[in-house]
Image 1 (cartoon, rainbow, N blue to C red):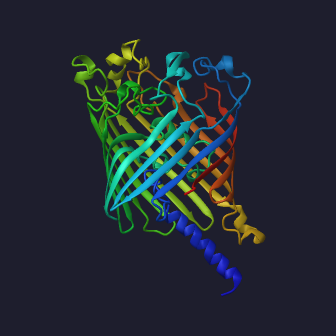
Image 2: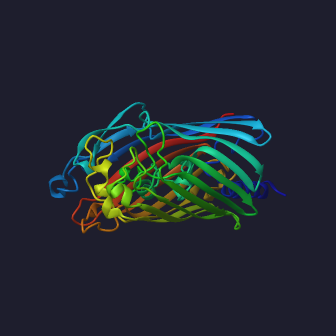
Image 3: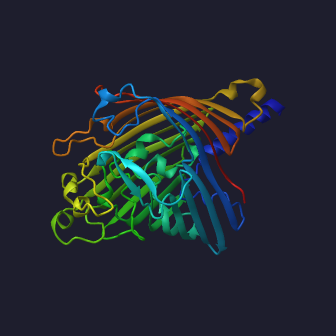
Length: 433
């Protein structure tokens, strides 16, 4: 076997292994321990953005007044994450994921668009330091594992594979990140395993909190609690199944079902809180293809919220002293569709064909999403209907580091101003021990 043939086979095997070994976020804490009892790792992103549209709070309610507003920019550290895992032996393991969002800690101030631009303090359990995973696991066999604690809810592509090497864009895919929690993590029980070419998982969780649902983000904030614990007056269940039968291809179905109205503190025995359920049902399909120098990813998510017209009248949303107080209606339906494809240009350069880890992907992405897809009581928020395209490059100097650059453009309905931007970032993901 000559050197060129050996290099080609080695690179092909590396690509196939990478596709088949795509690890769900819930498994990633222990996935690279490789026999060590202690595993330490993490991921992080550093980003620079320039947005060529207005950042004024009334840019949607008064678009004509803001079409010529100046651009604005920012530097950001969206996520800096530390993984810790330990193998106690006899099938017992522990894992945790600590995330610092936007480089800070403590209480953050934000302008809430759905509150007419009012300044609010975001108290997300101690500010912007989040315990995204904290669990103890018992492995009975490859087919049967039980995990108890704070876990990732793997509904949709973004939640199951949210680390920065799992998407081309500088920021996480926008559609799923808008309508669902991201990363979606809650306390509960998880049963999962592998059988043949399948991975499966089922979870029992605390219910979402309808007090946190919004017109612009649907259930995006529904997993958060300003209390020292997650209220579990109501419960939710999630399930996911991934199939790896075709080399280089992973396809999956996932979903969630639970009740959200009345899952708050204090529990109101009367009125809307007691009368309605606020059923949340989500169905999602996603896939990843990684072969022949191509990486292609796609997802489609559809969500239903029962009793959506009643949410505005829930006690905690009407009470100005509560930490919720959302005055806008919430949609009965929301959806997000997205696809991205990238080709490794270095695969066509002869001098670089023997460098499997040195890759340069030219990619494109298209998304269509709407957090307010149905008019609740005839009220419309048409600026939530977004079509977005992005084109750019991803350069991998080593397997654990990627440099990203993109031009993106949000296309809104004709009465609003479109939103172009340029984003540049660098990210890493790996294990140090």
